[in-house]
Amino acid sequence: MSEIKKAVLAYSGGLDTSVILKWLQDTYQCEVVTFTADLGQGEELEPARAKALKMGIKPENIFIDDLREEFVRDFVFPMFRANTVYEGEYLLGTSIARPLIAKRLIDISNQTGADAISHGATGKGNDQVRFELGAYALKPGIKIIAPWREWDLLSREKLMAYAENAGIPIDMKHKQGGSPYSMDANLLHISFEGRHLEDPSAEAEESMWRWTVSPEKAPDAAEYLDLEYERGDIVALNGERMSAAAVLTKLNALGGKHGIGRLDLVENRYVGMKSRGCYETPGGTIMLKAHRAIESITLDREVAHLKDDLMPRYASMIYNGYWWSPERKALQTLIDHTQQSVNGWVRVKLYKGNVIVVGRDSKTDSLFDSSIATFEDDKGAYDQKDAAGFIKLNALRMRIAANLKNRK
Image 1: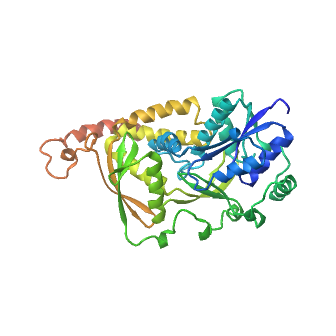
Image 2 (image 1 turned 90 degrees about the horizontal axis):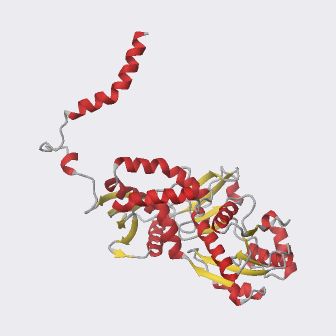
Image 3 (image 1 turned 120 degrees about the vertical axis):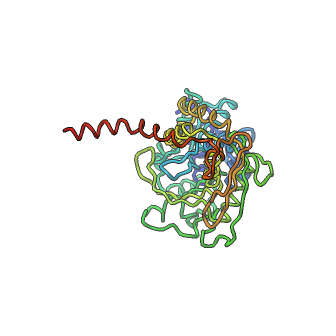
């Protein structure tokens, strides 16, 4: 283990990563660099600096980075250009954050001359795969330390005992049992796993939800929202231009207020097991519905269908950790090409857990031709007699097969 001189640790300052920090110092006897990412999780991150300093980390080896704008602009928005949904429901809030964390871990390792990175993902989960596939794609020779695959601290009690023996401060919430759930949050979503949710037949407790009111308690009055699009991305809400992070922050607040974006899901993990999780993705739920609406009038039919065919593959790439793979990059190039014409606006109505599209238009790129689609006199814009030949030609193979069957 002595060949590792310096390791960059993905560090939250919580119990688990504080134990990992000390364990790296004791087990690998290496210099540790801490990296704490602000992805919009809504927590004060500066305490992580104080904790790292207290554990002997040099000030120049402590990185606390505000990545909110990069996260939404370069990861969330590209994913939503594809209308990405995993297994029909999951909007990939945890999955899409991991490639950015992996990228930053590698950036810092290059900047500080570290020869290893370390993370706190368990050997049962998807995150170990996502972090490490990303790291190897960006720096093939990097060494990776995954403590949960090496140590014997496989219970909360053992972690607490190690922390106490090492003099690591234990917050009162941990002494009292902490949250009954394992949670992950960023600007796109917050997730809940474990404990009560490990019984897939048990309804999630109402007190668990953090970002959304229940639809039953949402306002009785609907709220209208206009979203303006340029090349497939939202650039303004109700006429106010905003940064990518500001857009998602605003959508989260509005969606949460109206009880939008709750999901209770049993998903298939990459490592082979089924896992139940609950998710709140209020802003993402609005984005998905609105984006499909603007595409409905600006995309060619076959292009739209091709995107729908490819989307499950794209979703699986993100879920399984292949953001930095050549196939994801190639597919992103195709998706982004289709978005050149996705410009215009969408109006949605938010009401008691629902996102209802009530209008959409594009002054420059709409393919909707009312002179052809009308039920009134189209003045010859569409010759209905043409349909007969079209139908007969498309029925030809079935007519041939039926005639053959009748002859037998």
